[in-house]
Image (cartoon, rainbow over all chains, first blue to last red; front, side, top):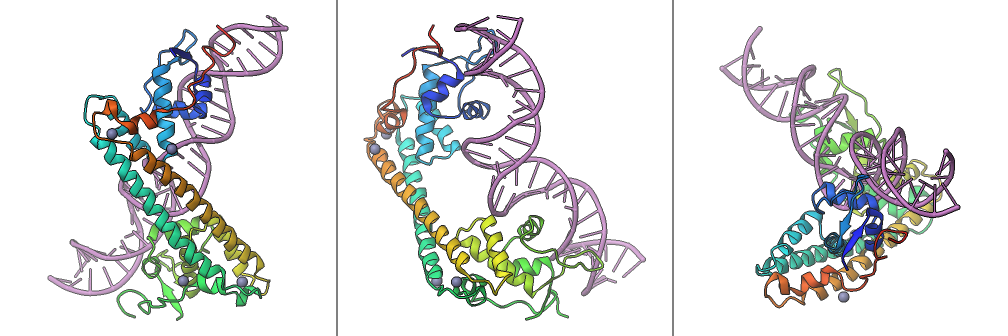
Length: 146
Length: 146
DNA sequence: CTTGACCCTGTAGTGGCTACAGGGTCCATC
DNA sequence: GATGGACCCTGTAGCCACTACAGGGTCAAG
Ligand SMILES: [Zn+2]
Ligand SMILES: [Zn+2]
Ligand SMILES: [Zn+2]
Ligand SMILES: [Zn+2]
């Protein structure tokens, strides 16, 4: 409950790669810890908690710049939490949009994949479907006529 | 129906950026076209069709290395199309897996986001949820005892 | 005093583009 | 024949969030 971890301990405790921890320090997400005489980073519980927060937020799909904002808010605990709420809802919306995209994609892909009746590549309906269909138009030759 | 396009024409016809077309050439997806005396690339219908194929496959989420394989198969039209079928099914599976991931994510995110009752950051349940919960264990201090 | 686990810095790679910088070409118009 | 502007060329660096070295240093146990 009071700390003194080296980077490997911290990485194990948060299930991250050591390089990731250093990366977060480099981009300013995790504050630089003090060093030992041998120049080893030495972390405390604050670092551990912060890193866990980052990892959980990443697991929920938050981008690092958003996480940076979230951490900034967490560092001002007397402020109202409305903007945190807002970021969480924005993240939900983003995930929803991605799901919708992928669902459309899946339908189109199924449509395409089910066309194949198993002949040669030349006859393959999948290839046909990928090869185009609509939109064969082009302005004849070079841009300004002949 | 017979071609002679400059890179900009091709980009317009496939709704791609000019840089993307050059990029595909650089990584060997699109064959190098002949050049004009002024060193401009000069494309034909073959290039157009190939590029359209790439764009449609990308839109369905295929990775470029898979598209490279697909194109290799399309170039051997007398072979059986079974492996094309296979790649399409693998792509479906990949999309399904992504959807499943995101759906789990969405549920967890909703769970977290709905906790907030709108006080200060200190009391915010979202922050609490992100800050950790389970797994407060750590091996006391440095790795091999005191 | 050596071994081996751990740590350090710095750089380069991943995928799939995108965005310049710093030029060259070409065609129309004045 | 000069100028303007649309287009083209090469080459390099940037994006995201890491990941993977290379080439060293530190430190405790045996
Ligand atoms: Zn369809
Ligand atoms: Zn087929
Ligand atoms: Zn939950
Ligand atoms: Zn709240």
